[in-house]
Amino acid sequence: MLKPLMQESFILNAESQIMGSSALPHQPDSDKNVAMFRFLVMALFLFFTACSGPADVHETRFIMGTLVEFTVIDDDRDRAESAIAAAAVEMQRIEDAFTIYGDRPNAVKAFNTVAPDTPVELPDEVSQLLILALKVKQQSGGAFDPALGELNLLWGFSGDDAPSSPPPVQAIEDAIPPAHCIEHQGRQWIRTDRRCLLDFGAIAKGYAIDRGIAVLRQHGIRNALINGGGDIRLIGSHGKRPWHIGIRHPRKKGEVIERLDLQGDVSIVTSGDYERFFMYQGKRYHHLINPKTGWPATKVQSATVIASSATLADAWSTALFVQGVDGIKMQQEMNQKALLVDDQGKVYGSLVKSQ
Ligand code: AMP
Ligand code: MG
Image (cartoon, rainbow, N blue to C red; front, side, top):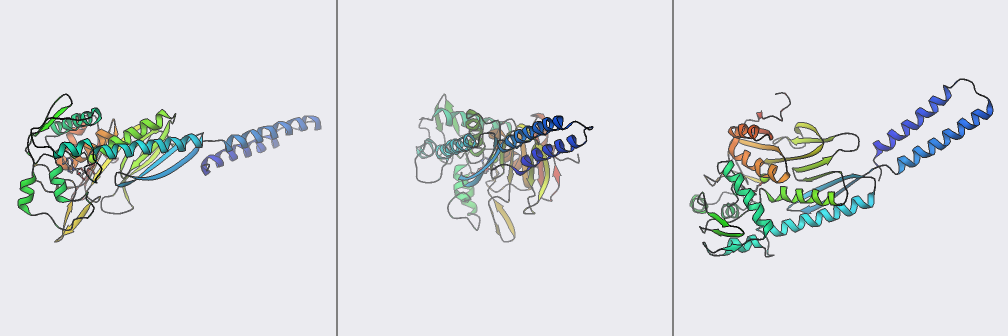
């Protein structure tokens, strides 16, 4: 389907031609006929140009436990649709390769089940993402930790049955992994402690979106946006205008806390305590865990980061959520943009327009 705005702008152009011709000085009839003929040719040209203008193709797929929205602007609707289909297949492949949930085996689950200190060869792709995740862990002072699988399984936010009360205090204590429990030599990895289970939940969605965008590009797409439940990467523009992005208000559903006009190649990801949570005895418990305490991180409602890839924006939005306001400075030093909403609803960071 053609985007209405595009059609309108082309029709407006055609109308301005009519007004222009009526404002011409008096001409003989033959000249008038020639002018009329030229006008009709121009009008037909504009009409067909409008009909073949860029298509704005939207599709939604359920991948990685969330609705993933694809928007592609392209002259060729068939190309846009097949590009989206291929991107969705690639993103599903990544979910299958990295998830620690479900029955289907993968290398990450295999790693998590071998006895501690047993070397395991991980596929290149898993190895590369793990190296990046461990770098973010080190840079964030341990706020982000890809070895929290045991704790995350215990809290159960990503399982089939949503939890309704916190696990026993002792069970939480017992599930906290030591600060350094993953080691490697090349693609050979070991976990040195039984509490140490890989969980790519805070970074794999961003990585899948990066791969989705790469596949769209391989199909010749230059203007597109993939939104996986608050993890966004966009390329190009939305027709003649930038992409309009709203950062969700963490407490007012349907409202945004900041609006941004973005174009080019931008990855913007938000981690929020409203995504997966339960209320217990008047207190909110959510899925973003402080690795040092084993309990949901406090003092923040949402953290948004713009980074050079969706993978990094995803990892850093989780890290910033756990770090809290103190983490904002690090984002500036890394030339990443950020917006953080604290537990009082106060906003901080370079993405706040009033600053
Ligand atoms: P996100 O929504 O991207 O912030 O990721 C949240 C998911 O990442 C959770 O559901 C857990 O699987 C995992 N996770 C929770 N806390 C952390 C943390 N501090 N570091 C790394 N992964 C985490
Ligand atoms: Mg994340």
